[in-house]
Image 1: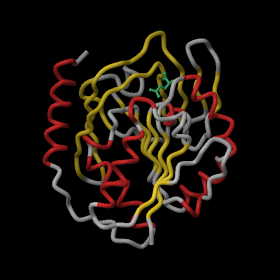
Image 2: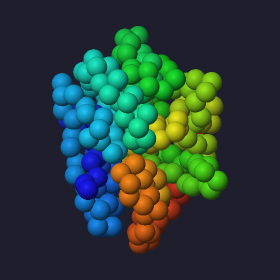
Image 3: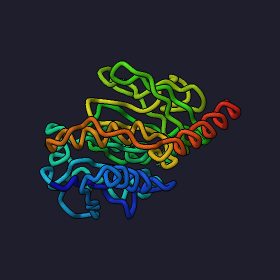
Length: 245
Ligand code: GLN
């Protein structure tokens, strides 16, 4: 049994080191002796929903999002099937925006989204840039999520869509609501780059645990020594709080 991590269009959607999220999932599986392979989905290729155990979508400039939009739309049925089968999806920034119905950039150009999650994004007059600290309540316990954000988009969640967390420092979805990201079942969207997962190992293991469960592996992963990750997250949290806008 090999765990299969599928990043979508990493040649276009992997801005601000988001490809690091793929490496973290891969390495945290390897450290546990779980056989794992990374199979990037290139533009124009078809996703086999039965051949993915975790799907990642990184961020991108407006033009990169426009370049992948048509291809992503064509993969929406396969993505919907994978999600229905319990495959976790982690989408960051531009990838998060394309989980929704669409993204309208600062020039008024609309890029259609997959509509997999009921959310909508409209670029604002300026970019929301800076370090970010988010409080995430997940399945009965509270986690801290740190990183940085750089987006023009302001994302509005549909009435049935829960935010991923509460902004303690930074802007989050729109700089107003105090919400960051979204979570619908095992689909997680977030504006947090960094890359996200190295400094948030709890989130990496959440996604990895879901992927393992789906393949009949025990989703309760043995703990790793995350002292270094914790020191890095402490530093990032302190910077975000000091920067609080
Ligand atoms: N182009 C989108 C925006 O500016 C997403 C940016 C990103 O992925 N960092 O909002």
